Length: 536
Image (tube, rainbow, N blue to C red):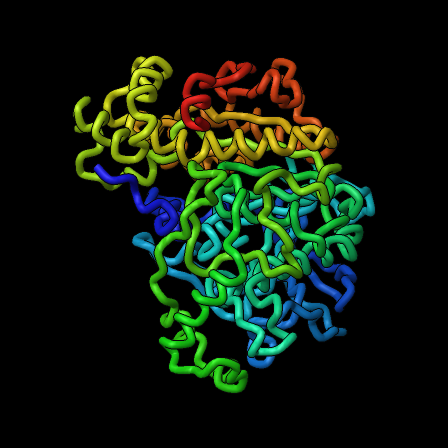
């Protein structure tokens, strides 16, 4: 058995979410939704939202000009101001993106190059200065949306008395095509355009969130999977400094980024497919958007840095080290000093890779010999030590489960450890590490604690995602705990809250890690034998 082509599956994560039946919306038809009569002022013009069960909701707020025509592949610019109140009743366009086996990531949302919109959920328009939580969606750097059902912010906003913001930004080729010097200074950061969109959205939050009941001086950025990688990258980006004050990375430890040289070569493959000459700005700006999307070359994942051979490979159109917006790899060889003062909470799920094996016809049928062959295939120099260590760490796991555990530890657990220890080594703001141990009740727990299972729990969207989290009281109990932890961290920079044992900050000496479960507990040096084998 070969290791799954992880990155290529990761980019359609949002579509994978919807392979679970009945999860196309978090709307509750029993809720009373009414337009809010009084418009709210923003930097660019007034907006009018909705009022639903005590929460004010603003969907599709434009935070930058449409990145089309002459603005294509350039850093975002402010939108043209307006004077007539905009009715913010529907989600804005999501970025152009791939469509997976489950269809478009968010169903009813339109897909368009004009995609720079954000959404706000708030308990009050009263200048109360609540903590602000800005969600960066998953889907690698190629798909996803701030309007995904999992990240509907109404329940988390109400439960935590916090302001939730979700963001759409440019993805894939439209967000991360790095053009060479031949295209001129306007395109020097074209390979970071999608990340600069996020920076622009954070500037919007800084300038406007006070009018939505939020505190611009207490902003937490958080994201899962590709969203976690975006959080990691923002922690190393000078343009983002001062725009957020806390960070949460869920199952997406972003350590690496390709060089500008590599990114330019990837871009040249696109230009060749389009038949556009180097430096022909007019031709590229006037090209049909769908033609550009379809011309993306199929590129193999870029191997991990030699110093981090176990981290997840990246490839295709992703943010690069352009030397301007991003001047260094996010967390290689160390944590960025620019965000030393930012508290970080970071973690992963115990069985991340189970969902990527979900359609494997042999799932549940692998033999012990096939498990051994798998470990020898993916980690040949470590297999002899790793195989008995895995069996010892997971004594009740079948050979299939052990294969999933191998890939999960290799792809997620070790990257989380790398990132946490580098952050802790700065001796600045603390880092808190978790592992979600709780297993989904759905499908007889077949997928255990799989990738993305934490998202509906953090957002307290259990009822809308029962086909994913399962029936019974356990999922809601986990959601009550995890949503409270996330709010506590956003409020104070410390995740300790009622229902948890004391959660210490992570250090190289204790490696204290909170295991989220029905009875959560702290484990010092979790899977230490496996960790030491992997980092040899």
